Length: 381
Image (cartoon, rainbow, N blue to C red):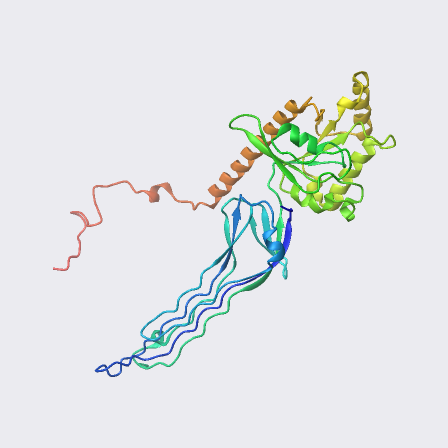
């Protein structure tokens, strides 16, 4: 199945049915009065996050979704039938925005999250609602409301805790194969990865995190060069970026230090918020460097690159250094999750109304709502 992470669709909710203006006409019942029923509600369009989906390919060719119209009201107090709603299932992580205004309507960041994207029109009122003591034969009714119509932009941003980035052939796909059950394509030519890949890294039975691999970046990616710029959005939800650097490039003229700085600059151009995310350097392909030269090559790179938040030295192809790296990642991810949960609880606590303790649950004083000996009670004798 091809991977699609962006789509544009039109959603049209159903119109409400019209109200009915009629009067009761039966034998032996003169002046039966109004009995026109209401129109039915138009169908709405809902979007639901589904963890079993991982692409927006369902919206690649079907671009318009139209809900049904509500039935008109009838006589004898018959109300029109409401139309059925349309449910659009989308991958978890889909951001829905209005194409015309640019407003973000919803972020489907949890499985099962449901949001209304187009509301169906309300049904019109029948004339039975307009009767009164001075107007016993109303001929007034109302028409059904029009349903909402919207042009939507769907953008999928995968949900991952850690994101991989680096130049083509830096070893990102090899690394994700080494630490998870994901099996992306690996080959000895650039741009082997053509779509994001997700892998679950499990450090114990109760601890795990998700890592995302995107196509390699090249200099000028923020202006559209290469493939990686199309998928940088998938790194915006991550808590940490792993910048893989090839210390043993095939091209003898390649400079790992210059390439690493170029990747960081592309991040800054694309999204300053993405550039400010925590970013660890991972020096990869140490197995291609002679053992006696490794320490010198690593130190030369670190001196030339400048200060880094944290760095690791690995060989993804044989797993050297990967274990220490994934446990450090797990500790970081756990700390981030605890911080977010603490912030969520603090926000909920601020939203709760302040209730004075002496008024919330008054202490019993021997009396009840019916009064006491000292308090007379009015009785309707």
